[in-house]
Amino acid sequence: MKAMIFAAGLGTRLRPLTDDRPKALVEINGVTLLERVIHNLADYGFTDIVVNVHHFADKIIAFLDQSHSFGLNIAISDERDLLLETGGGVLHARDFLDGNEPFLVHNVDILSTINLAEFYRTHCDSQALATILVKDRPTQRYFLFNDNDALCGWTNIKTGETKPSGVNASLLQHLAFGGIHVMSPKIFPLLHDFAEGNPVFSITPFYIQACRNHFIQGYQPTDGYRWLDVGKPESIQAASELFPL
Image 1 (tube, rainbow, N blue to C red):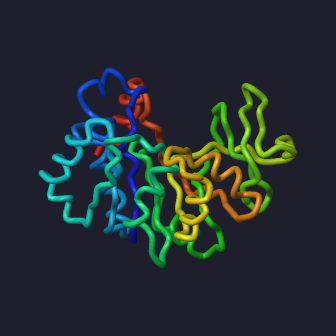
Image 2: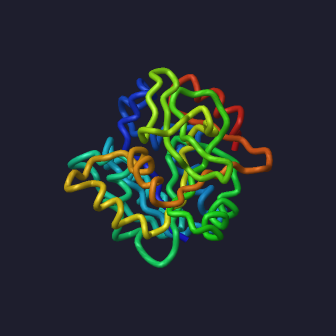
């Protein structure tokens, strides 16, 4: 099975830890975020992984070389010339990810104990273009889902903005994105058309537009699990306690 790890970000929320290293190489109990995500993916059967790089890209490449890619097939999607954001990053890695099976996309700063194989199977058993990990947690921006777990839109509760226009957010479930998703390879021509020649774009506005014509589903694990966005220095201590190994 194939997966992509988003590791190209500037890590601005983790400064000063990312002043001399990429976010992917920040350590939790002596183990880098990148290594933790790679091992987690491998534990659930993902053997072909592409990692996008930009900020301190050479350090990530050297780390993977020194680790002999942890015995997996790990490729690099090079964004050193231009940081492409999430949607552009997936499209840029098309040559590695495209094929006859879905692929999983995982933010490097998300740590969890979610059963990724079950998550992947849930997507495969559906007709969804993409399956998004979501969680009922406080945040400012939410995806909006109907009772069938179909994505219907997005809202910013601070500004009151809702997309697409005409969507009644009060009638829909408000769920926060969990930083992991599974995508069908059918997504690539749609991403190409959405980009319209601009390689830099986020996946969120793409999802908001695509959900009008395509089934994009939310996924909430039913069992208890640990999940943490290690995006800020103050989250390091919490991560050390939640993920000791």
